[in-house]
Length: 132
Image 1 (cartoon, helix red, strand yellow):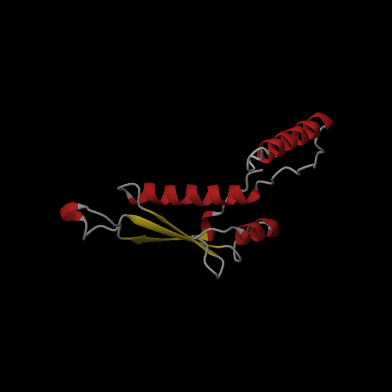
Image 2 (tube, helix red, strand yellow):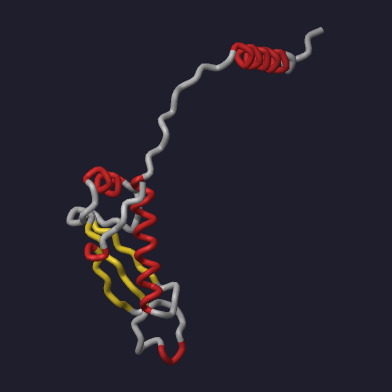
C-alpha cells in the first residue's frame, strides 16, 4: 500500500552543493535540502509512529526528516530526487513484515544433530595422553 506524500508538507531550500565545480561553483545554488516534519504531516498516525521508530540518521530528535540532494546539476532534478528518496523512506515505513510462525525441528534433524555431537565428543576423547 503506497501512501503518497503531499508536496505541501515538504519544505525545500536551495543550498550550495559540495565538491568541485569550477568557476561557477560559488555562484549557483543547485543542491536541495528537503525538510519533512513527521508530526505536522498528513500521514496516517501509524506511519508517523513507524517513521519516528526508524533508526535513520536523516531523522532529527524533533521528528524532522532532512534529505540533501546534490546528485544532479539542475535544481529541479535534485528536488525530484529528494522527493523520491523521501517517498522511498515512507514506503519502507509502511511495509509490514510477515508474521513469523515458529516451527519445530524434525525428528531426523534432531537425530543428525545428536549423532554429530557424539562423533565430535568421541574425536575429542581421543585427544588425551597415550597411556601404556
